[in-house]
Image (tube, rainbow, N blue to C red; front, top):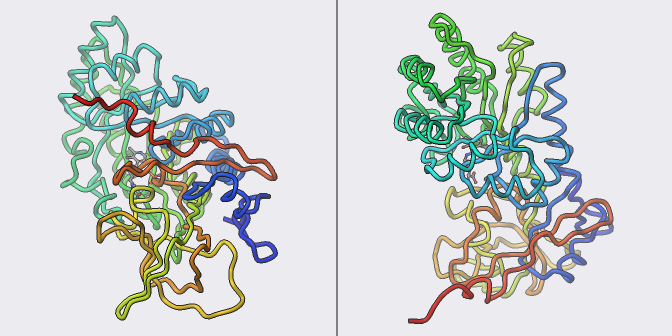
Length: 414
Ligand code: LLP
């Protein structure tokens, strides 16, 4: 995004020089642009026009409390997949009645907590889960609002690990058998059917699979109407892709325009659960080059960030741009494998990257705002990176770098 840009040969995050932030907070460092987060959320929200809607940011994407707070202040809803994410939303000032609860394995205690705080909807993924939610709701003398996540069997044409709408995936209920499950749900005393839900995958760069899925959802809605089951909202999930390097995903406005045209019903409420398209290009990961290790076969640039900080390259062979924080005018660029200190061959953030480097340089891994910090770990007893939010000239440390006591403090000798 332009909120990360060069000025006088220096990378800036909004009005802050990245070198200054790295000096203050150390590296590896996640930097988030508050303006980018706000603009992307607003782009979703505004593209709905007068259609009743709720943009439920997918918390798993980037769940730092400050990120959630910024979105909650805009009026965002939230898509959660665990009680932990629900607690984050509540602590960040989000409203329970704007929360939808997805995920294939909701535990009893999680259902209880969600009912107690009054979430908007449970997205049900199986017959067994429906039975459990009925039982918990009955016990609490509450009514659980639900939608059933259907699997429309469309090919999202994305990486197999993040494609979820095909028959062979564990997610959702086969759309063919969904009417029977809806009928059972409608007959349960502590269940209130309110919606249909689907989510077909992530990092989609075409509109067609979304429209195909919506068509199937609309057919199901008609079938359900015939059975006397009225649907108040359609939850179309998340999945809109971003530009990492050469992708050309549809604009938010084009994506939603296509969906609203196909829908052609100005009164039904539409929920969406975008994550990456809001946070992805709102974040970068800044790292320092520790050593250069040129060899006969390969040049390795060993950096202080690793797969434990950003696992996407190792896990999905994801390509994220890596750019110098202060580009050099002298010297020449050569190809480097940009690797971390972790003891795994898969520990790389980029391969064959043309860079003009010296030890001590700062690099920025771009598009790291989504599925970056949230998928990080302490592998190799590495404290997780600090996270900082910026807007204009202001910076807030929103999570300090972990200390060794954070890592070991709860462990016990025997
Ligand atoms: N709703 C549901 C039910 C989901 O499972 C997901 C993501 C989303 C919404 C948000 O999808 P998005 O708008 O971000 O595409 N770790 C992977 C991505 C996993 C996506 C999981 N589900 C990655 O780094 O590419």
